[in-house]
Length: 350
Image 1 (cartoon, one colour):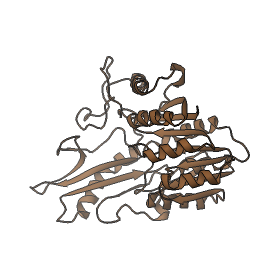
Image 2 (cartoon, one colour):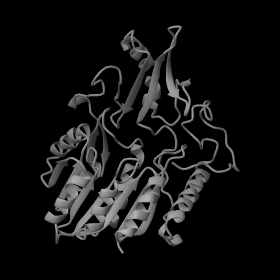
Image 3 (cartoon, one colour):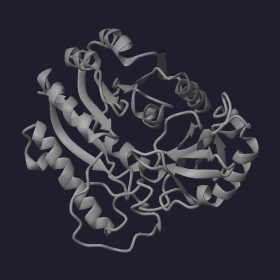
Image 4 (cartoon, helix red, strand yellow):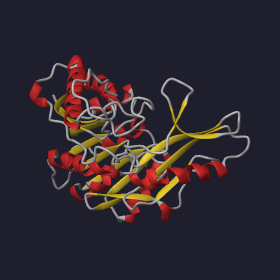
């Protein structure tokens, strides 16, 4: 999460709730200035932890869409003491709810559905429920589904899975799986990773914290073998569905913690050219994972994708201590108009 700095050039925010709901911080800036500010904040944060040359930072890659890009919204439905139902966003650090009928960073299909969503959720809300956390989502196909009331309400049938096309392949995801909120920029980051890897005929690609398998599946044709490790069962279900859908026989799926499986996998692959991508949760890497990556001498390159520059800066400092050197820092604006930023790091053995 990046903290905004003093505003010098202002424009009229697109959303009338800007400054109230707490979701966006940069709607009052021209997009070019928002990007420049994010770059500056990121550099200051990383340089504070590591002494790095200026040319190691690439210019931020802008999002093709700076508004109406989010494929997911998380909303709260609340019943007040007088029986009135409210639906919207909980204001940060408070118990107050800001009602929302339109969100300028959410996909238009979601915005068109919000009135219907409230009606359907109110009808479904049991009398003894005072609060429900709703999830509404859409994919490239334009279908909108929601859940959040009742056990397993986020589970979807295979025929209803959302999808987006990346590198010519459909990648399926669901209400109950993690997936990037901005579909419009995914192709750019996959292509950047692909361009930096020295692919050989026996290259093994390790997709760690693989989720539904986005990167491993998108790059499966370039590698002799892909190993995906993921511990979330819902994501594993979608990953296996994606692998089966594309009939990919060079992908091995391991269910569990990266820290558990990685040492044995690296020992098994010793002598083969290996490249790993890590895309950990917002909190970053466990110390045991950093130690394992430090001992992984067969790894030629390591890519670290992070949505939290703070935990990223901390982990880069620790990775440097176990033999990894930062070669490139590549920010991607996955979250226009907000303080958040996705960052891709390319590391090699020091």
